Image 1: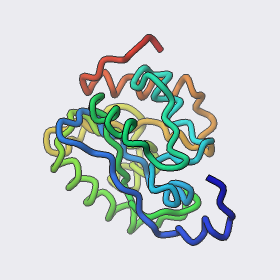
Image 2: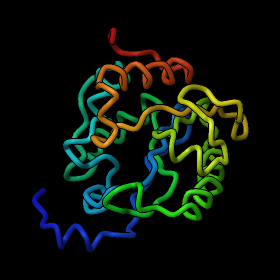
Image 3: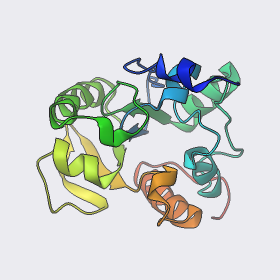
Length: 192
């Protein structure tokens, strides 16, 4: 989907629908949608984002999903069968997550908690430690399982797949995502 910079800017502040279904086991929570994701109305729509390649490498999916033109119904059904869901901490599109305010991140925590309490996955994994530190008032947090729970859901922080977080390799992202999938009871499809 080709779109100009000015067209992308028109999506600032737009939201992206969650991908959640009954029986979801693992919910990945992005920090917030990017402008391309808002335009496509689908999470991780920028083809340069490493989220879906990392899910595939981790064995969570058997193929690399391409949401650059939105989700296909087949991919939505596939994620539901695998028990994987997607949401955001702050459902407000920006060019970079760093544009979000502290108030937006803290407010996003409450919204995320409501979503998680409604769907009750085994595990929720927030994609980004910096956002977690602010939203959850835990300035020393590191990646991995956190001491908090949301309802009955374990809470994990995993590395962001953003290209701005390039010091994590694709293999390191896949390893972290595989760990949360196993914790959620999702059997990887093949060895990572």
